[in-house]
Image (tube, rainbow, N blue to C red):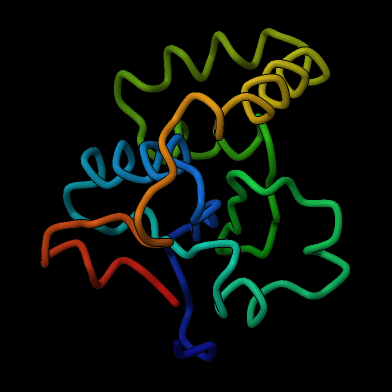
Amino acid sequence: MNHDSPRIADIVFYDGDCGLCHGFVRFLLARDAAGTRFRYAPLQGETVKDLLTTAQREGLPDSVVVLTPDGRVLARSKAVQRALERLGGAWTVPLAISRVVPRAVMDACYDAIARMRKRIFQKPPAACPTVSPEWRSRFLP
């Protein structure tokens, strides 16, 4: 990855061992037809170590984390809200609704789902979801 060129896509880090996280990545892939809004990397991969400091990685959930082009690291409900914001269109409606709910409540709901996700959703066979060839370039190691 060229760290010198400006980056316009958010990087979505996800738990490579989680079926729900894989589903979220597939959801974003399908709605980012141009492939300009997001890049994806497993939390267990090298990209997270290259782009986030040890201090930034400590305490992050092992589900979904978003790194914005301006360097903000967003976790839990803020990560999901950012993804909806980047999708735009009709996705701004659930985004607006979620912003009315206090963040503590949103994060508590997020954490409750995160605790159950590996029991409910089947573990994927690989850290990177199986995707079509045109989407493979959107994944980072």
